[in-house]
Amino acid sequence: MQGVKFDPEILYVQKIYYFMFLATFTTFTCLITFCFIGLECALIVQGIGISISYIAMLKKKNFDPPAKNVTAKRMAHQISQDTSPVSIASFACQLYYYFNESAQAISLLEKFLPSHDPLLCITLGDILLKEGEAKQALHILHANPFALVDPLLLATQGHVLKRIGKVPEAVYMFEQSLCLAKQNGFPHNGAHWFTQKLLSISYKASIHHTLADCYLLLEDLPNAKRQYRSGNILLFDLSLWRHSP
Image (cartoon, rainbow, N blue to C red; front, side, top):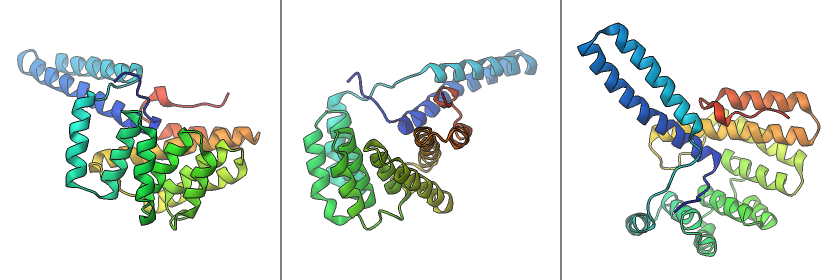
């Protein structure tokens, strides 16, 4: 199961949880030090431990997914108990990313596409874009009734438009996506509330960074720098910060 490439938004959430996992051990060590040595040494241990945890998070570049047999059992159980759009989208993502079954993932999502659920449409559009079917992805995304009111649908359309060279149109989509996200937030995707919060922050940062890339293509350096800064401010992990060339 080596070589699974996670999207930057997902990677950021994984890295934050990795930092929290390491910081938990630091906290326990600090408490033990406080009980047996004293407050001053405990604070030193806490500072050193948090620093090491943060550096380890910065250097962490990928995470190994569960073994295929474990993932397959989990998928079978989940889809047998729950056929909600969230569950179907998750099932399709696992087929695509973990098992490299792109045709099956696309076929599954197309089967449920008439429901017009934004999450299913976004997942299908994203997979088609990764498979080099940008025009088909754009057609499907545009056909969704929520195409201009869902921030993630807008952002996905922006990515497709950028890929096919329609940069001004992509800029408009990204800006509208950020505007709606600031007003109403991103739609809930079934994740735990804390994970959802982290994903929302990560999505906003990613949209700012991609918008900056678009401004660079349009040779608008001041706006590009502004968008890079806006995205960086949202990210706790300095290794994911972006800067203009």
